[in-house]
Length: 133
Image 1 (cartoon, rainbow, N blue to C red):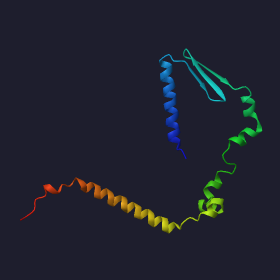
Image 2: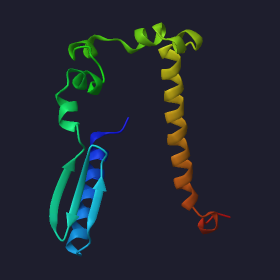
Image 3: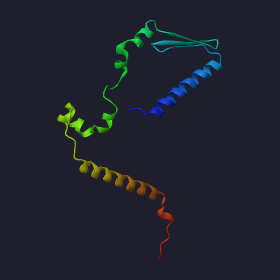
Image 4: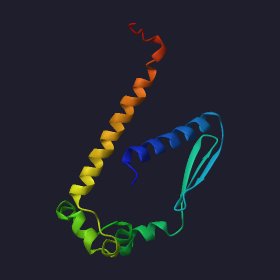
């Protein structure tokens, strides 16, 4: 799943590049499929695909664009584990108990911390240590 910030940053970078190209007197022709954006001699023109307005006004357009038809309130009440168990993949692959996965996660974190500690002690030079004789 892509976060909104990544998409937002990508779009901002894209349009910043378009603005830079226009400032350098470059003509741009962007075909988005549903519309064509043309910047010619710093003049902006947009042409929508024929039939696009009728397509948007159609009764099926909104239902095709929706990702889910269930109300938003059900998202907060739906249990991931319950939906996993009822899915086809969930019947083939059994998930381990949460206590087992939590213990593995804690062990992995402990290993990470120990490896960081061991790597930081690598700066210690044994030749600089003075021993008593």
